[in-house]
Image (cartoon, rainbow, N blue to C red):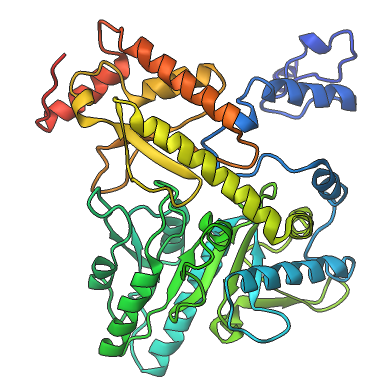
Length: 469
């Protein structure tokens, strides 16, 4: 007997034995499976998960209208990079870059603005970082100085892509801690860790951890004086994964983009508040001269010479079509209305949660349609539960509201976060708030601490914190 073959799943089942056939987990099934059955097996396995509209943990777009979905489905087989076969897709991509660049007040006057498409804002961040690193290396070589110790400055509330970037390109990441007293990147603290080897400073518009915006205008003003005094040429790359599609419509008067002198590049996520299904990111440079020539690669085996900027080569065209569709479909007015509605719901939830005696909002303001809160310190002294218990209870009702610890320097703080996206209504917000209030009411009746509470108190007591039950 061939033992290896007996371990393989046999899923070429008819309708009669479909319910008895397990899904393959280690090997390809021996036979083909009818498409309707394969569909149902995958569908059944994903069905019990949290419904997308109740997932308040993700930033990613989970809803597009029927026309957008149809358009993207029809382009599911289109590879963007094959510009010879799909030249109009490349034109639409260029138009999207133009629109985004102008939305961010680019000073570039050429017909086609300098930017690139990415598979999400992570690739866009990488491209912005690589450009800054290569520009720094070029300056150092021209000055006859070593290029072996580059560093990048960012707040401790960075998104993990920056850790990946620094690790992969062997760049020292200098973190500026945030705290309750300094909840965003402090300009003076950032400049204090800069030196001649700093390739760029990365402020964030729409911090993933907190929802707040770093004060980019204050950083730019301080950096202008710093560069003039030191003779350095340290630029800013703005990580606007969330804020890039929020600030232009919510706070158009606020200067955070290319209106600031030292902002050389900006990245954003099209699949967050750009309102496109994942994955899509964009990066724009202030001018073509800030994009090093080494970052453009050409091939001639697709029927013509194709030049592109990106870490990935092949990439789906559907998301680009979806972004261009949104720009046509919504326009300034539509984007403004959607983002303002999301902000209004977030501010409503922020106010209601902040009014609950057991909670305290991390910030008094809401910069983007997301915010975080933590247990009120006085209430926390006698509580028998933690925010992890609240997360688990809400999940039983279908809500995904994450609890997590904050970054370095305040890593002992546990918070919860709500991200409001298109499709979140006032009625849904009221249902969420009612479920939170009901859960807290039940927690307050507990006679004994929960398992997570016991673990939390054990850690905190080791650091000298006192609890009274």
